[in-house]
Image 1 (tube, rainbow, N blue to C red):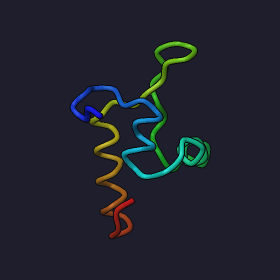
Image 2 (cartoon, helix red, strand yellow):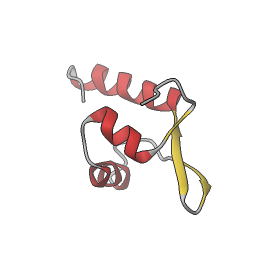
Image 3 (cartoon, helix red, strand yellow):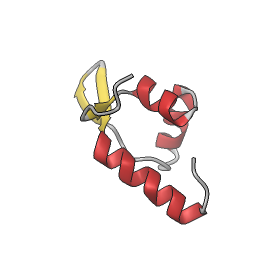
Length: 66
């Protein structure tokens, strides 16, 4: 999997974090994670920089990694 891309798709993000896509949607619904960008009805994703900042902020907040 290529991690240097600008947009991270849901399945890729779930794999990177070691969670299911259902968990991503639950986190999204609970406002735990950033909202994805919508490029079309079947194409959503997150900017790599946004996810990197979110992961860093989670580590700083909890002292643990995701």
